[in-house]
Length: 59
Image (cartoon, rainbow, N blue to C red; front, top):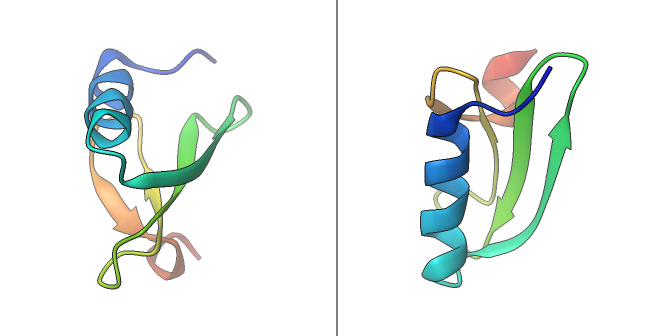
């Protein structure tokens, strides 16, 4: 599975603002994992729909 356009747009915007510490795309389920410098959302998942959720919501 390839990343969606929504995922690319979100990751590119976060990288442009220097908010992403690292990111990882999981091709098996289509989720893009990110770690940001934000205290509110330090680790999150960008779903194929473009929704951004904390990792604990995905369990």
